[in-house]
Image 1 (cartoon, rainbow, N blue to C red):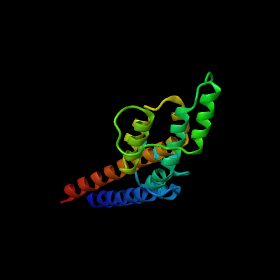
Image 2: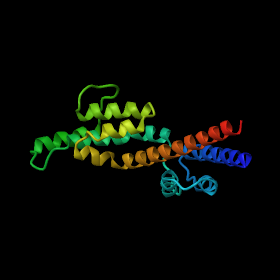
Image 3: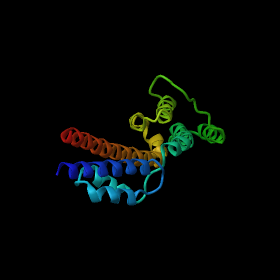
Image 4: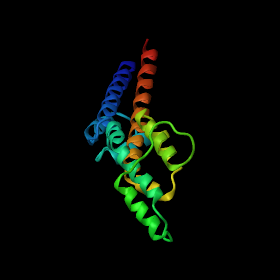
Length: 182
């Protein structure tokens, strides 16, 4: 019946909203996802979240807080002397590792400091996807230094993308059922 469909749509919308809320922290969210899976048709988003639900991902706040340390390591790695560097270059590099200065804020250009500063601003603004695209421009050594942070940020972005898509679809279905029942 129309009322049954509307009730199912409402339950799915509530469960999807509970999943979104649960995913915003850093804890696993398998219980909330299980409730949604019990009343929703299979979807690529549900499957993606099922893979990620057991571990969760760091919150956006935690990612923003940990970014400066990884960025400092990336900046240092980008300045590391090559294998053929002389003793003087190696000494200067080792001394520079004691105190790492890195520019922050909006910077033009594609240098390591500019890329890291732009990505940091994007993380602070909540735009993880854009920050991850910015970090693609880093040279290999800097990318390697950012890899642990990047892996966690990619998990967060994937969880958010899929959870928000599920909620949007559930709310759209609920709205459609409400219009059909009126």
